[in-house]
View 1 (cartoon, rainbow, N blue to C red):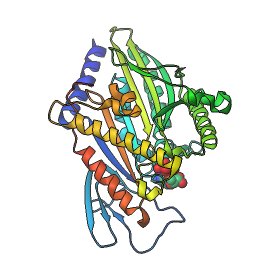
View 2: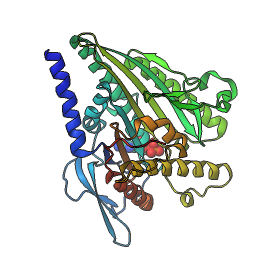
View 3: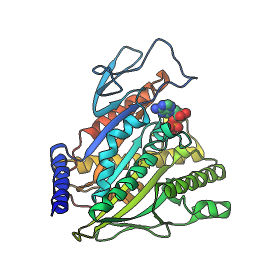
View 4: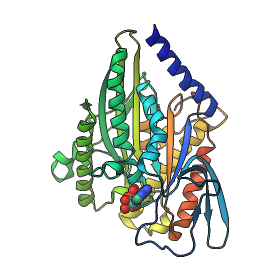
Length: 367
Ligand code: ADP
């Protein structure tokens, strides 16, 4: 009886939080200046209302003296550690074990700290990013819930989307000459809201260590792709997905959660990258998929019943069941503090502010 009541209470608490705040959050993270960056007198980013590593406001100053203020759910300054950031998302990660569909994105220009935030430096325990920390927590909690009768099975897949083409990062390394890149992966959604990508490698996983070796394999596949295609990893979206099925042997209750952790391609605009040829094609594909993602978020957050353009990009179509409805989305907007990035930072902050203004809480017609 106690277990059932405890579960009910937990769900109710989640739902109440959802109703109160909508289910999309935006966190902003500013990375420190790197050794070779301009450390001159003009600091372009400041934190008006906070003296600590965590606040809600950020101010960007342009050289002409113009200032722009933004407020987000959380703002992490240069001092914020990987642990400080993880503490703020651990509840959200936990909700995947309760049966929610969760997406955590990192958005920002190349070099702004997306990969550092998501993956961190796996070799240094203190510098581990959100992906390894989330997975460790998921496995630890699933073990501790065993006492209450919960049994979980988990499956992981890792892919990237480059030029609107899916690459399976768990099979790529095994193929010679990157043969798998020519494979056409088709995405289908079933009536239960599960996503199926044809031929995608799906691994049963039982521990965080197992996933960490899959992540290593994926990183290796990514770098193979990079040299073959003369491409930077920052030009593709990296999508880690963990499907979680749980059953309580005492209560017969079942849950199906999904945790998607996504390191998006760099958001820099065309003019800055000076793109031509293949680079131009890449940049256009990135722009298209990032703007499709924002179109979907804005449409989901709209007040009217309207068409949600999930099919406009591979990324949004892949994530369709995990965006909107009672799913939960968190977007990190990563910011470089150096002066040369001011205009890109402003674009990222404006984009993030629009996302922050969205409240997605009502299931909508999906097309
Ligand atoms: P992106 O993935 O957005 O292209 P990276 O994560 O590769 O950017 O970060 C660019 C550089 O900045 C890397 O050298 C990374 O180690 C460093 N960096 C990013 N964020 C931080 C941080 N919060 N603290 C220390 N170094 C950081």
